[in-house]
Length: 233
Image: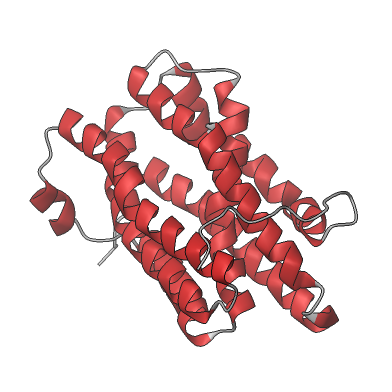
């Protein structure tokens, strides 16, 4: 089994993924306008709000990694199996290392993080990922996980131009603006375009609908942290 990077497919305005991004442009605009992200770049985001985000993201990443593992189990091409399985492992290792530094800054223990309940939005987003990765088609699984990759890269690219006076927030921005993360996103987009031709009109419409739902959950995730969302009962 080869572990070589996935060879890029031709991309351009006619690529399936170009249409996906165009469809999501209004949601992306709302994301970039969100006060959570503005607070990262100007340094005014309250520490308690960022702490809430990090704790909930730690819960989310476990579900995200499981969804990637499920998608890898449905893949048939060697390079796609390697990519998805590796991305799932990195969701646990690389990003958890980033979170571990933040959690240490907040004087929280791993036990305290684990004991914090998942918020309604975290629960809904993780359930969305796992339902489509486990019970849907291979394309459904790809559509469900795509937003977390692609939205974060584009947010990172936007925010890194402004930077942040807070070194913790700058570290977060740099992670998602990195060349390494961008290359990973490009590999996933190549996989999506590779499979789009075989989906048919109905399959492509379903893929777009799931992708857009994932984008909405990304907005909702930042908004939930901003609002300090908890279960009302």
